[in-house]
Image 1 (cartoon, one colour):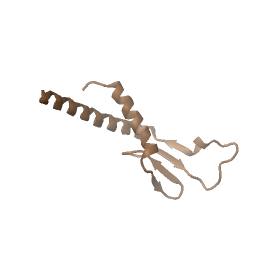
Image 2 (cartoon, one colour):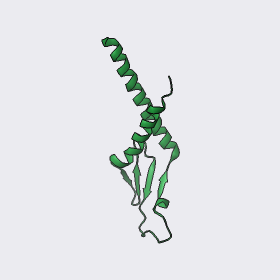
Image 3 (cartoon, one colour):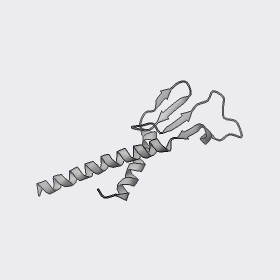
Image 4 (spheres, helix red, strand yellow):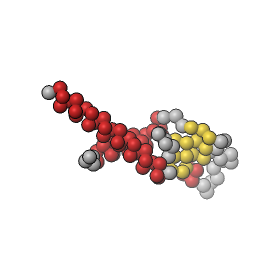
Length: 93
């Protein structure tokens, strides 16, 4: 199997876009988990408001291993679909 950089960039964009477009899961009272098929981003909604010297990104956790795993799953799925389309085109000729 050849490595396709364009397909990898598309799968990275799709994986990161799942944060925006797919529903999140809610666990306990303070965590919102984002990502598909495995949640890789967590937003902590703490009961106290954000302090003046605190930045919003300090309440966000990104699990790099799950992010890479999600990108890999999307890449392999897209690669399989592209190969399937190529085989169909060859059969129809």
